[in-house]
Image (cartoon, rainbow over all chains, first blue to last red; front, side):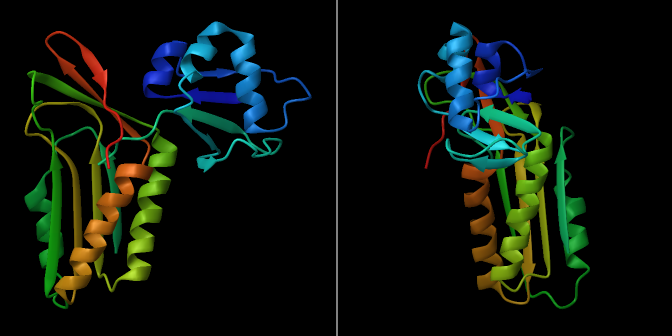
Length: 82
Length: 138
């Protein structure tokens, strides 16, 4: 799965994107976040304030979104456009 | 007509206005420009804008289309900048034109409000001493 990170989250994780092989039991976006936070403290730090959004193929989704047909998942803090 | 641009180069507002003024049917054109402002307690050196290219383009397009659907617009131009900007530099330009002013005003306000909370851009303020990511404000 291709993962993209932006802004503060990109800085904490120290990469803008990566490709990760996800275990079979990762079905939802919530499972993915849990998997990442258990994988390394760097992700735990990045997501600790729970103040982030997840976009699957450029659409913002909830934590129960099924990711099996998703190609790219972006994780980012609240936006500050305009 | 919808025109969406995301660019690092400076905005040429008079060029964009010229495009609008060529339409005879329009009685009203509303222009909103958002610019980099200084901070209250510190001196801002630069404002860095990061964005998610694919999604930003989609969101700006959708916003313009929704504005078209809801108000009687003839043209809608949205230009958003990214990269390193200085105080006074324009960040975003939204031009809406319509036969009548109310619709042009309402559509313009709708677009900027929607962008503030939905378009994947992030601002970082760099001062002499520190850098801060801007948090979302209402």
